[in-house]
Length: 493
Image 1 (tube, rainbow, N blue to C red):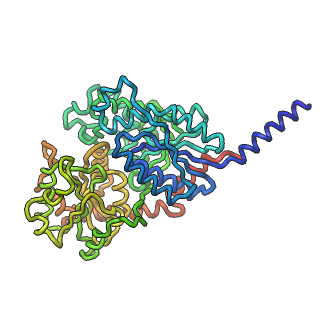
Image 2: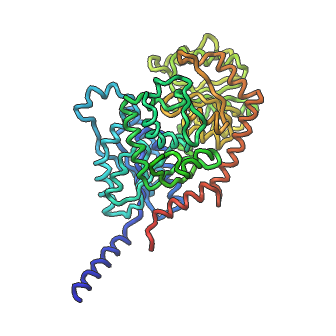
């Protein structure tokens, strides 16, 4: 009897200690800035539903000094504004083993980031163990790039959800990749250009529509994505930064398990659109572009912006400038110098007297503009974008139609989905040498701003703006999905 009482008291002590632990949700993003921003916004959303919890973000080694600097600046701004509700934990630096020393210089940024994250699994294990000593860890939410952490969470008995930051159509592709790998023996880049790739939940695709990171099955990035797809099938859920009304075909295919033949699809939670205006309140924000927009007619300006990595060669910048001038449309263009061109030579990037000839009708902004504020300005009527998913959602929420000009990673796939399925964009098309001609820029800009095709895209985008608002409202599809997600983490009483 005494032994039974002792065991009972020990059980009560353990329960009491557990009850005193503060709830925590651990987020593990890729260290690339766009992924960190999306993950932090998810953390804010979780806090809005479960304010008693704390958000802990694991920060891993970035693939380059530039990526490290961009992420560090953002983390500092969030830490200053979020207080103790969101905290960041820098994992020990990860380095490639000696066997990779000759490979490192040849690895693209994405492949290097994937490799470093794969090697980070022991550090994630240690961090979760440490946090569990003083917190009740409700869940680990990982970036798709961090899929190697799924087995770690399983080992520790922590619910693990994947947060896919690139929309439901991208997730259908990555979950279907093992099936494609098994049934198509060639690299996608070696297929006939017109070869049809049929993926559940997406329009029919051709090889050039696929992410450039999976075009060559001999690349290391391809191998890791294939492994990641299998790991994600073992996750406890898939969180997607989209809303059902924007991508109904893809969400239906995922819910019905069509993308994992012979495997398992984790439960789907579409909780978007999540967008960030992280430059809000920054005293150093450039107001010049907004003041210039104040002087332009309603819906008359085409905004061109290509993200933090959107750098073009001088030849392409010249074609863009000539096309914009010939279009006759008003434009606001964020320009980054080519790698071999000093910032001090900014004016020399454009044809002679172009700035003078387009003065009043066009404005070139060096390096950066407050994108969310610009897209929501009443003078902006179109957006030429690199198809980064954060930018796409920002444009949808502002009701601004787009011209899709993908540059890298999964952006070609996003263009195909935006143009063929969502119908919220027109496509900018490059020639065989990869350069988009001045004539193409001129024609697409005019088409967006002054044609029936442009009008159709505008109307669909405005409809999706209202659908996004409804999805986030009380009783909306994304609000309901968030409730289901967070409630699934709460231990039964």
